[in-house]
Image (tube, rainbow, N blue to C red; front, side, top):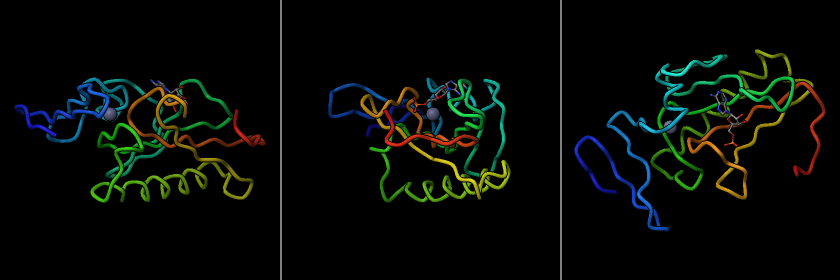
Amino acid sequence: MLMVGRYHMHFLEEGKWSDCMNEVGENNDCLFCKIVEKKIPADIVYESEDIIAFKDIEPKAPIHCLIIPKKHISTINDIDGSNSNIIGLMYEAAAQLARIFNVDKDGYRVVMNCNSNGGQTVYHIHLHFLAGRQLSWPPG
Ligand code: AMP
Ligand code: ZN
């Protein structure tokens, strides 16, 4: 990782320049960072110091929310000892959402997609919180 002015430049193995993050951990090109900054509207259902959760714009279940860290992390591949505490906080938020939507007893699913084969389309990690119907398994 290189420091270039205010930005951390990441050089990926594939040889592409990646995230341009400022010192507070926001990625200027990232849709979900813009939601965190409230530059793009979202239907926010939960917020804490480190986490925000909002309704998915194209819900795949009667209840479909996205739980994201406020600090930008692109994919699961970027999780390490320096930031993995956020994963526990995201699951705490999931348990909170389950109580808020009263689906803790009936059940729900949380899932995080990674890169192309995993179906990731927004490169700021997010837990999908899906509930309100019987979910099939295995996923397609
Ligand atoms: P994934 O494909 O796992 O990266 O999930 C990205 C999710 O973000 C999809 O379910 C989209 O419907 C959702 N999404 C994209 N743009 C927005 C937005 N502006 N507000 C809320 N959800 C969004
Ligand atoms: Zn981001």
